[in-house]
Image (tube, rainbow, N blue to C red):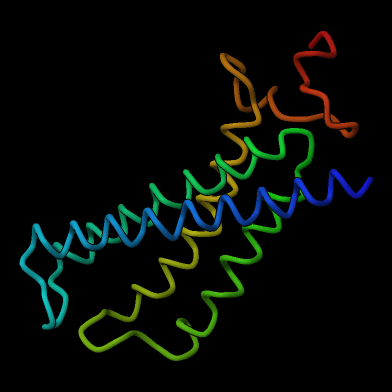
Amino acid sequence: MDLKSIARGVLAVLAGFLTMAVLVLVLSWLAALVTGVDDGPPTTVYLILNVLAAVMAALAGGWVTALVAPRAEWPVWALVTMVVVLGIPGVVGGPAPGQPIWYPISIVLIGGIGAALGGLLQSRGPGEPLAEGGRTTDGARASEEGR
């Protein structure tokens, strides 16, 4: 792996994380606007909308990461690791006031799994089934190898 590949991978992780952060902020703001949640405790509808926002943000973040670094898998796994590690304090510290116990745990799991799935969906190539898509060990698309 050369310096250019490493730099591109780091940029991919940052782009994916930024995508996730912006989407979560915007979609959470919209959820608060729609549900009327301002400074008070979150409603069930608001929490559900936030979980859906986390799914969309995680998928998009993984997809962007794989798009920016298309010949390497490690940036997607670095993003997954980053999301999970940054989410651990929220799980250990317990939910915020008004949040159910499952909420911080689900956000971390959704973030990690969603980012991995987003990367997988982007890297599989158009029209390739998930079981046959993705990259070979040298980074080429499996479909380019005649499969």
